Each structure stands twice: as C-alpha cells, then as structure tokens.
Image (cartoon, rainbow, N blue to C red; front, side, top):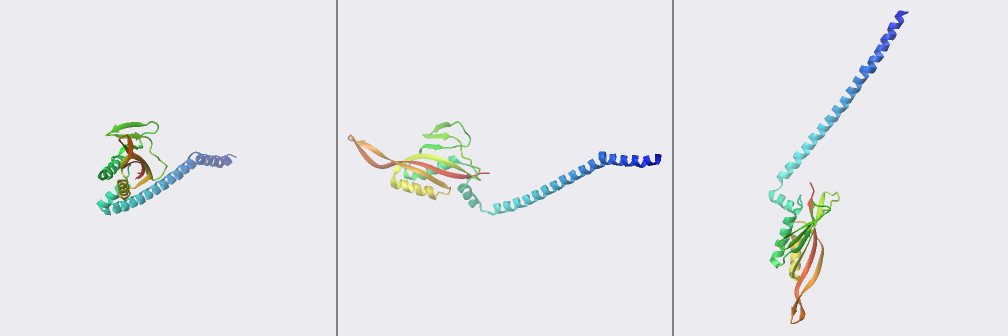
Length: 202
C-alpha cells in the first residue's frame, strides 16, 4: 500500500515544484527575451538614425557657406524680429520713409501685454500663433509716410528682399498742409502696413 503513496507524493512534489519555481522562471525568461528583443530593435533603429544623421550632416557640410547664410535669411530658425525690422528700415531709408507705430507679436507672453518705447517705436508684446505646423508665422505692423512713387519702390524692395514677407494689408491716408487758412493737399501719403513673415521651428 505504501508503495502507491510514493509515486503520488513524487507527482505532487513535481507539480508543486513546477508551480512554485519552474513556471515563474519560464515566465521570467520569456519576459527577458522580449526585453532583449526590444532593446535589439531599439539599437537597430538607433544605428539607422545615426546613418541618416551622418548622411544629412555630409550633405549639409557640402553646401556652400554663402548659400547656407542665404537660406538662413530666407527662412530663419527663430523669429529674429529685430533684424527684420532693421532690414525694413534700411529698405525704407533711401526713400526718406521713416517707420513709426511699429507693433509686433512675441512668443513670450500669452495673457498680458507689455509695451516699451524705443526711439519713437511702440512695441506690443502678445502671443505668437502656434498651429502645430513645422513653421511659425509672425506679424508686424508699422506706418510710414512718403510719395506714391517712393511707396511703390519701397514695396518692390520688400518683395525682392531675400527674407519671405507677405504684405497682408496697406491703408492709405493723405497728408495736407494748412496754407493761408486753406487746406492744401500734398503729394505725401501715410501708409499703414500689416506684413507677415515665417520662421522654421526646431
């Protein structure tokens, strides 16, 4: 009778050993294999990305420095608002047109606006638009005065400038002189510009 209990005890011990040791060990080994596979895949992807990076770096380094500078100016990787304002002032200067009432948006503030005055330029800081695109847009407003022909030449210079600029709107108003109690029209006009430029997000 006793000999029948020994196989039963051995079978029970085997089952208990499988449940308490073998099965958890197999699950742990399976988990480790999955992790190793995942790490190997990540390493493969990392090597592929490194290869692409090296190719792009090689292409970038092969581009002429002057052309890189022109591309940077065409579509900069930051707003670079001060430089754009200075460029527009430089374009307007030969025609005796002075920029006034300059207003632009900044990415630094959302709900509150700050203003500072610098050489007669009023600067308003607000929120820059972010619509999830790979490029950002930046809007600038300013006014200036000059003859119609100078205005036309100034607009042509803006259009031919290397940096991409869209003129959203222009408002005209005429100046007048008071001579001998009478209002005399002049050939000078006031122009209120709204322009938009673009920058490449990182």
